[in-house]
Amino acid sequence: MSRVRVRFAPSPTGFLHLGGARTALFNWLLARKMQGTFILRVEDTDARRSSQEMAEGIMEGLRWLGLDWDQGPFYQSQRLDLYREAAQRTFAGNHAYACFCPPEDIQARSADSRSAGRIWRDHGCRNRASHLARSRVEAGESHTLRFRVPADRRIVFRDRVYGKVSLFTDNIEDFTLLRSDGTPTYHLSVVADDWEMGISHVIRGADHLSNTPKQILLHEALGNQAPGYAHLPLILGPDKKRLSKRNGAESVLEYRDHGFLPEALCNYLALLGWSPGDDRELFSDCELVKSFDLGRVNKANAVFDRRKLDWMNSRYLASANSHDLARHLQPFLERSGDRQDRGNDGRLIPVITLLKSRLNRLSDFPEMAVPFLTDDFDYESKAVSRHFSLADPKERSRLRRWLETLADEYEQLEEFNLETVEAVLRGTAKDSGFKIGAFFGAVRVALTGRTAAPGIFDVIATLGRQRVVERLARCLKLLQ
Ligand code: GLU
Image (cartoon, rainbow, N blue to C red; front, top):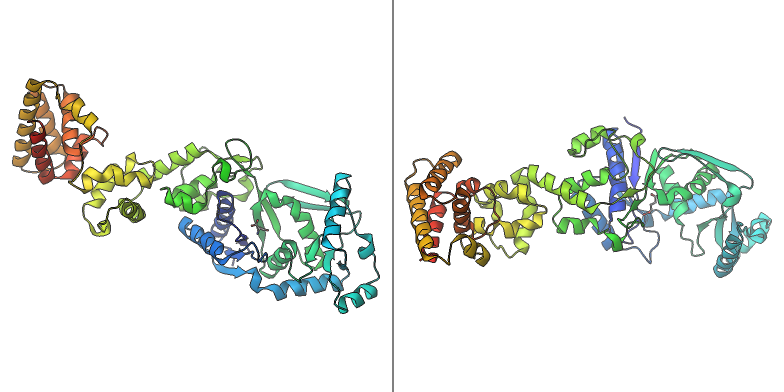
């Protein structure tokens, strides 16, 4: 069995944004490629800022993206004993000490030292004899538990993306493990969990790079072997600032609601920081899994390019299976007020096939599909005046005659298919003496009410004989 065990560890304090989704995706890709295990761990120890609702939203986003997890969700709030036990072990091994200073004091003194370019260590508490500290703890005095960062050491680790990283411990503050209310901090819970869950690779955003030396020290103090680390480059917005709500980062579920396909978003996210080493850009899920390689993640910041995502989405829409698209389209059809259950409507699939290469988003579909899904549509006035020669009664009646001829021809046509409808339309256009483009344009408006529509032969074949004939007849009235 593969030794690869990775985790996605979101804090349920906000939505699943693109950065988090990319972290989840890279973990998932490695797990799937190496037949390893992908674990979902909800880091909800900050009870004030976390909520179950956010956790549910994050999971909904992961499910929508197809990033299925093998174990979990594990909630850190339900694993507090594990963290307290780890804290006790560091304390017992003298790797941690009880600090009795009021938190405001600590904050002020750390800030002062930092601005003077030093790291502050609370020598009072750090150096207090352990039996004295213990008796104050036992007497119930309020305290935090702080890690005793060893002096004068260099922490060196090999990040799979950033290469060799080294940090002198004199630059690391004695960080808190347990708060005064006994709750664990992020560093403690992450280290205890990564160890207990047997995590082989920690893959997370580069914003956690600076946390890693602390976590390695803590693993060491607990007698654990630290996992491998791979930090993913930051994602910047078009303004080269960190991607945020202000410069384009919506939650993953908003992308869903705006009409993106999950496969397109995954494909796009995969290329934010990773490249296959050649110029391929479009990958099926399987190809992504096969091609993915942690060694090809680069450390240069990735820039979010909305236009490229739009382009990718349109490519995915064009090549998607129409039945799959029908499923994705259901909520958009419902939202547009289309009350029919199109899932069972034989008409929907051919219309999807007709229109999918013209869609940028799923949300474009309901409007584009109106003339194909219903007979009750309006003629765009611009299209009518441009194509029906309204100003010239003679031309108008000539057009009327030829549209009538076309309707007759279609009515009598033995087989009504793409080839035969094309031959008839071309023949009628030629006989009519109208310019071919002008005649096709008029037929398009007659059949759909608009100028922008797919290729006219496809439109005719998709609508079918009966509707084509009816619509031409309806249009003749308009031309009278
Ligand atoms: N809970 C952390 C976050 O949401 C992730 C911690 C980690 O991956 O180590 O940023």
